[in-house]
Length: 285
Image 1 (spheres, rainbow, N blue to C red):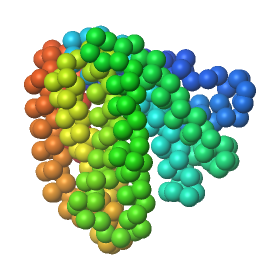
Image 2: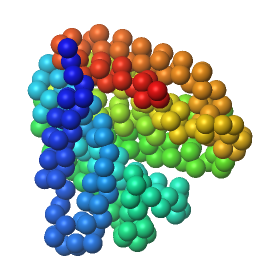
Image 3: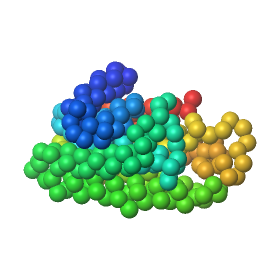
Image 4: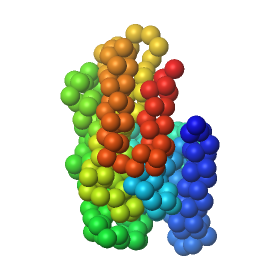
């Protein structure tokens, strides 16, 4: 029987070791910038995006290690988005994962520049991913660029900031969930598939899996974050606060769609992706 806990523990350790090597040492000038970058990356986190990239490589019949470098690229890009999201001009958060945010610890200017440098490093790393017979560096860089830009996570952040405390429509919620969460899941899985020389059909299937998984993941996050009792309309920024039962139902349907998409991939190599999908709805219980 597949042991998801052991799998995640093993892969997370591999990701942490890789990130340690890939990030500039804090002793390299400008030290304040590299300290801030490393602080941002090593404040915890499940490392789900690089783990998904490694699992995608397996689902295409390759070794998990093939998805490690592009997965770390997505993780570093994800970290840059968090650094910028926390800034006073955006979400204005002073704490993340129980620690002071980067702008609190290093100043707002250094936080902006650390985020910029992390974004650049992400593209450097994905560009270093070895090309395959079917996919080259241009394909992989384009994949990350689309996920990162105005049609991806930046667009999602703009939409989120535009809510201004009002009750969003279900369509607005779905847009934000797709572009703030699912797009980087999709980049992780598609890049892992590309790095493993997965067929176009397999890479497309991994993208469908990722979209559905990412949406379900965000819905469960909303359920976890929702107030236990009556949120007012201006507090109800997510569907789960408005109708938790509908949100549970939607998350389960999305997980079913995600698992169905894996039929195009290697059956034995897809065990981890199937197990991760099955785990997501249970996060709310």
